Image 1: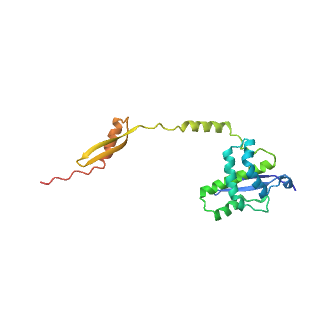
Image 2: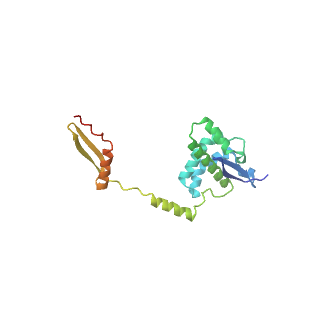
Image 3: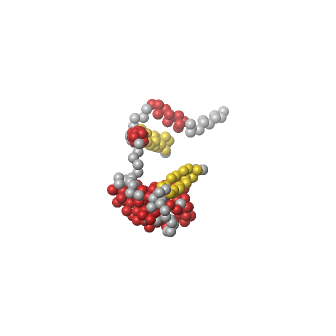
Length: 198
């Protein structure tokens, strides 16, 4: 019997569900079992350098997927793996946050897709971003400019006979408008004058 496999993701009720589907390929030739997947993970950093896959991405996929290996069925081919079941078993044993679960699920799904592509002789590199996506990324990088550091100073003010008030982080280029604003804020905390008695 002939199969090929791909992983798809759909969203339902705010939960991401992953399914592994079958098509035409030779299971006997591809050897898509847990031990083969583990071998692939061990080779992933080296394969990444050969296939223009980001090294950091490859290491993240390997680290997350390796931690999930104990929860992958030993006797089932990749076509019968359920990412949700694997993640569910993992979360019952390990104390992880919801955001971490999302990350593990995404990385395992991605690792499985690359494993299948590798076994089929296809590229494991992520598809190139569109020109539009590259432009948006460039614009975002241009917008996210680190603000210039403001030079400040500390101002000691003798307030009472035994009290000196220190105002810190005053900008050296303090404007009249800013000074008046500070005055208004300080005045809002002042107590009303006591009534005079005659």
